[in-house]
Length: 483
Ligand code: ADP
Image (cartoon, rainbow, N blue to C red; front, side, top):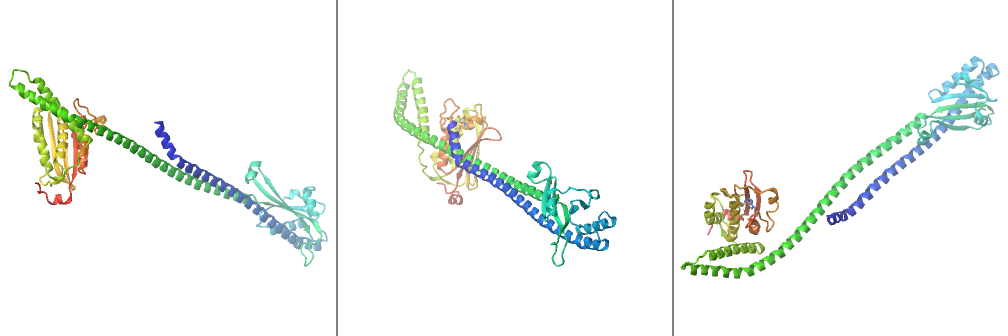
């Protein structure tokens, strides 16, 4: 049904907009978090570099001070000249440098003389090497400090902030100290120190990864919750729409049936009078022919069919224009008994029996006995017709949960699924001479008495009708008040 489908899609549209809006916001929040985390990392790296440079500067100044005080001065006094090629001087220098930088993460130290030759190095093989420092060395010898970050790894790793190695290389002048004015004397050479700061970079990257993991996890969870809520919402809306459509269809069907009922009632009413005349005329004809040798068979057929037609028209009228119940004190078992007695010839002729159990404590109800009679009669006739080769009909009436409960059960075939789906449809019948209005009339009668009816296949086989007629409080207290 394309119309039905498009109506549903139309109604779920505003919800869909909300859904897309929410999902988009979630994605934007996620991207925002990622950008924020990248910005933070960038800021953390810049801060790290700044701090490392300041730290390096301090380290170099301290080294300069210690070398001057503990090496240059004593050596100059003792030997008159600094000659690091001499083993005892080299050893002394090594001791001073190592004890100064001990426990700081310094990977390499090179000390250059004024000519730019390496005079001391952590790596003894480099002592004596010239032209190793390049432009930064020249700047240091001219009194200027340079700090450079050296990173190794491919461009992607460097872009992502995870270079394989990160080093800070500082070139600073090595100065003589004047008393009361530190590091302000002439440049004696240059110091190069290399610090490994790879671990700090890695720590920042790890922190960024954990931020991304956490935000991805939180966003994922939010997304799952959102999907769940959206699914539920859609399901509810879909259900409500289906229900609305069903009610609409039911309403239009009810309106259609009501107008059909009105028409049937009007036509039936018009037919009833001439039909009565036909029947009484045929009966009169029958009586007149009775004394003659003429055959009365045709008159019999007219009477019989007119009676049947009258029954059908009565059914139509009962269904289409049910009268309001005229409530008087009424005992249900008496009404049922009357229907059974009136049907007993039919039961006998069909080899069927009826078994009834009436609860002795049944109360008197306020009910329309004629209407109830019609309802029970319809149910008993259906039960009888459901057992073409005979059987037993069980009628059970009891007081239960403030209601008179009536069960009528037969031993017929019961209802197929297909028939069960249609039993309440007016004019639905599987019988050759049925009107399909019997059960509809029963339901209208029971509902007019504020009762309930339920038709089912009995577990013991056959069909079962269960009726519940509510008992008002005074009726329970006064069970024998029947008139
Ligand atoms: P009608 O008796 O005129 O067919 P009803 O409304 O009384 O109209 O019943 C509708 C249909 O329900 C019947 O034609 C029959 O197929 C099915 N039905 C009703 N009562 C029984 C029953 N006791 N056992 C089996 N089928 C039944």
